[in-house]
Length: 287
Image (tube, rainbow, N blue to C red):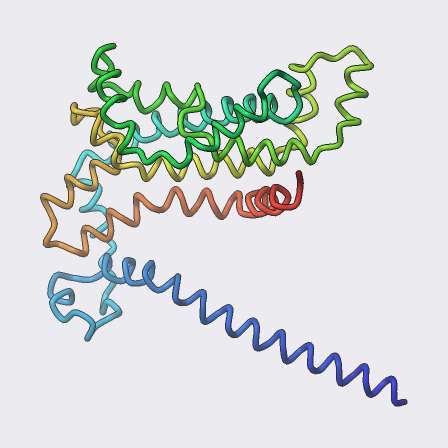
């Protein structure tokens, strides 16, 4: 009887702790959700309701047509097409270059491998302002300015992918070497091992890299601003800036346009959330 009472008391304490923990987590989540709710409610207000400021947080009648006005006020779908072209190619290029380089650092034995890996990690400490002028001069000399090439081509050669290479290397090092050794005994080469063994087992880490790359390229403003001079090549980030210049005083339309641009990232994250979390978790405990 005494043990039963102690067990019940322990379960009650655990239940109370879990309830308190969940309440704290819900309250903390509201802090992060509030800016998005503020954007959404602002996007649904009329100009008269905007003038009332914080006195009217919720719109009286949601103005869904504000989203239509935001789309039709600028060549939204042209900017969307340009963004998708850049983002899709950058995701493909970065994922390919990062996985191949990570496999070389994790599983291939070659002279100076560890030293080159340290040098690669050191590049993460270089601010973009340091390499901006040399990069701009280089692209100017080869005639790439004003095109999408400076935004896309470096991704296929590991440009800016040092962190992703490190992430994937840690994941690859956690995969048992016995799998690779068995494949070598069966006559497989390193490329076959990479394609048929490493990549399928590394899906969570690869999805994590692809998601990070997508968000970085989708929200990139500085790169398109520097290298894209033709408005027909502008991405959504530049388009939003042009929209802000033209409709800066109409905050409801500004918030509507911002939400539309932000939605693909949110949708992609929720669709890949479980795989993304697995990639972060396993990468952190392996290697």
